[in-house]
Amino acid sequence: MPCRSASPLATHETAGNTSAAGNRRRAGSVLAVVAAAFALGGCSPAVDVAPAADAANPDCAPMMVALPDAIGDARLRKTNSQATAAWGDPSRVILRCGVNVPGPTTDRCVTVNDVDWVIKEGNPVWTLTTYGREPATEILMDPEKISSATVLADLSAAAAKIPASRNCVGQEELQDLPTSK
Image (tube, rainbow, N blue to C red):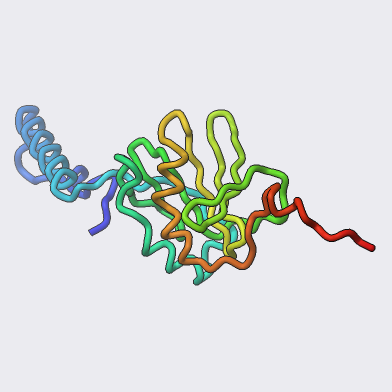
C-alpha cells in the first residue's frame, strides 16, 4: 500500500456528535489512527528526485534491482521517479540512472571494484558518474555527510550490472604511446 501525505480519515465527518469535546475526541482519534498507520507501514514521504533524460532505458533495470538496502548506516528510501534511488533521512546519497554519458575528460577518474567513476568535487555536493557504461549512472553526495569511498564501494557491484565499453585512462597508460611517424 503506498504512503499518502494525507489520510481520507482526516476529512471524514461523523454525523451526530457536533460538540467541541466530540470534535476534539474525533480529531484525537483521527490523529492516532493516521500516526499508527504511518508507524505500522514504516512510511516516510518519497524523496523527490528528477529523473534522468534516459531513465526509461531498460539497461538501467538490472542495476536498479541490485542496489543495496543501505550505504553505510543510510537506509534506502523510496523515490518518486523511475531509475532513481536515495539513501538516508535526510538523503545523504542520490542516484540517477540514464544521465548523459561522459565523454573523454580531464576530470579525476577512479576505479572502484572494476567500475570507473568520474568525480567532480562541488561545494558541498560531489557528482560521481560512471565512465564507459551506457546508460551512465550519477551519484550526488556530500563528503561531509558520508564517505565517497563507502558510497563507491557499496554501489559498484550494482553499477557493474551495466556492462563497460570503455575505461578511464591514467598517466601510466599514457607513458608509452607510439609516435605519429
